[in-house]
Length: 178
Image 1 (cartoon, rainbow, N blue to C red):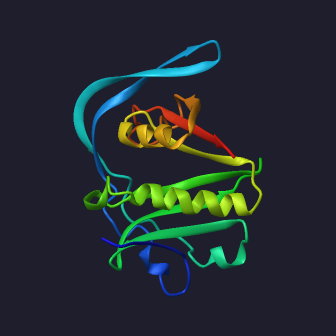
Image 2 (cartoon, rainbow, N blue to C red):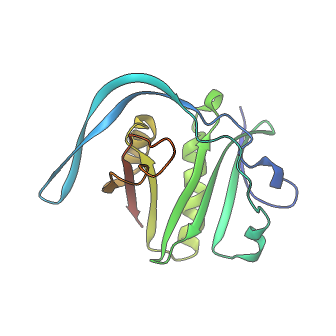
């Protein structure tokens, strides 16, 4: 299995979200704050499949016009296996977004390869660090971020309440300082 990471360009702009990003949620993080530190335990929940909305419309080529934004695709033998978006946030952090690996390629190093590339690009820009948001029910992603070196530094219990139907999920904010 050969993994390659490529930045978006005119040849691959149709690759956006061309993979299965769903996952089976079977547990969630139960948060506790003590002495300004967020800790958690993991609790089982009734299993359900989480889908992030499938394909979304994006103006891919705006990346050519913004030097502080990039989108990287992972390929396995020329098949799209995942993607990661990185943007400079107002606070000089890299905002990691739209990060996902196709369900059939998970646990093969593709997520790490994508994150490595996105963070290397952000470091080349001289940015302070990186942050991202995920949900308390995406325990595999949370464990990935923690093992990568990110720290859980914030949460929002209301972010998803305005959705129709409202979601009973907590937004979690993970940070990595360069």
